[in-house]
Amino acid sequence: MSVFLQIFQFVLAIVPTLLLCWYVYYLDKYEKEDWVVLALHFLLGVLIAVPVYYLEKYAALSGLENPGNLWATILFAFLIVAFVEEFGKFLPLGVWTYRASFFNEPMDGIVYAVFIAMGFAAFENGAYAWKHDIETTLVRAFTAVPAHAAFGVVQGYYAGLARFDERKHAVWGLLKGLLLSILIHGLYDFFLEYELYDWLVLLALVVLGMSVYYARRLVSLQQERSPFK
Image (cartoon, rainbow, N blue to C red):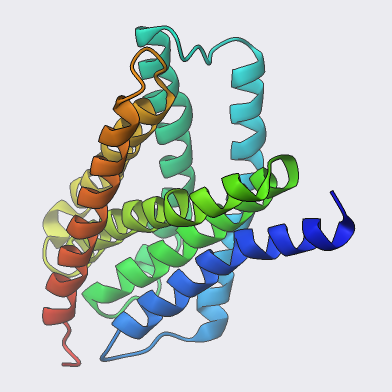
């Protein structure tokens, strides 16, 4: 592969994450967030993706990834991939963002969570683009990237509820977002990874479509709750 094509493929891997960042910024209708703070969240997502990437690579090389075995695939999809990735993305949201003064309306949880998720997806996509062909990069632009965004919306929505509507049960509210994102992510990855039945890939697309639809509904609910409306 030529250097030019490699650079083009890398750019192609990153652009969808930036477009989704812009889109969620656009959806934040009533009180825009500071771009510096948003960029920090994106960068945190990138930094989190680095150890997660190598942890998953080590797990796969250790033999934990076995797409032909049902229980091994369930374990790998839900614990190694979904739990590790979603917990990693949850850390800055739950530890820093949730307590910050700039988190001042319910929609902010979604915005910041998606920026973290897109930083994560940018690194992950870049790593895939480095090792795989342009077709893989294009497929991930329309699958993995919106999937990460949808999982981020789920975490951000429940963070907004915990902060503004359910303060007495804040910890449980945050955990609900984390657990639900792990469940959806795990289902998506399981259907992609399990090789016994090829048609399960179609179920992965169903999960993706439902996740995006659900995420859009959650965005609408938080837009309506804005005190700046």
